[in-house]
Amino acid sequence: MKVVRHQQNPIVVPGLHDWRRVATFNPGVIVHDGKFYMYERAAGSLRPFQTSIGLLESEDGVNFTLVKDEPIFTAAMLGYPGGSVEDARVVKIDDTFYMCYALQPYRFDCWPTGIAVPEYYPNHYSEWADNNMEPMMTQSGIAVSKDGITFEPLCYTTPREIDDRDNALFPEKINGKFALLRRPLQYIGKEYGTDVPGIWISYSEDLVEWSQPELVAVAENSEWEGTKIGASATPVRTEKGWLLLYHGVDVHSIYRVGAMLLDLENPAKVIARTTDPIMEPKEYYEKFGLVIPNVVFPTANIIKNDLIYIYYGCCDTSIGLATIPVAELLGILGCGDGLEEDADR
Ligand code: BMA
Image 1: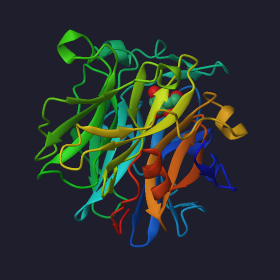
Image 2: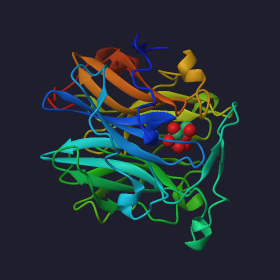
Image 3: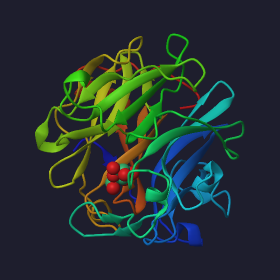
């Protein structure tokens, strides 16, 4: 594989507080005023498996400490005290922090199987049915903040009736509009032009009204992408295009990572794409965890000293860090180097 794992991996592990007692994973990361801020998804128990967003900080991007003893963003703040907020992907545009999150509004239990995706049981909790919601359905939204610590819910980006997660905002407006990657699971069939779920894009002027999603990419390499891909980390600008890490899930529920390059002016257009994964479960902590085995799931990338720092969830249990030179990844994509410096990323 192409990436180098940090020797301190996993760099963030669960513990210290009840709300993050069993798992911390799939973090958003951003550099602000020279400091790394990490937005972890943390769980206090398996049953119920309820996750919230905790905040950590670091001077070097490797050694992180908790900023607050409490989660900074919870489903309760959205009016769903039993629910989970998941997979924060954070960008800063002008003077505002934007956190894309997934929401499962009601409680469910997690029964790990040790071989693939856990059995998730919403059946014990009547709220799903009481509120006419399909069990385990995920809606996505955006919360905003001026200081990166106190977030206010702003909007939902996806309808309540469909399962739409892996939302990632581009770190700047494109042609004057906010641009959002998403993965509407039900967008399949003739009218959508694809038989399998894929990565789609929507635009908005105000973050409230979103354009009809346009298809960006679907699983192509059945061997490791299986039938499902989704945006992983927030896209990064390079001279050659937007660099996007994405995840693919094979028939054995093994999560791997690929990369693609999207057109700078029209990011619905894929310019280049890896055929082989750049990352797959290899180390013990990537193959075995409390919740699910064989998962590497990046949700953030930062450029530092011409290296891409990839922050990723390991088995929905801990957080790892891997790096790859920007030039090397662009080389793999057949595009040479071409990073544009940006102080905040
Ligand atoms: C995906 C999402 C991620 C999770 C992954 C592995 O569908 O739910 O949040 O990390 O599965 O369980």
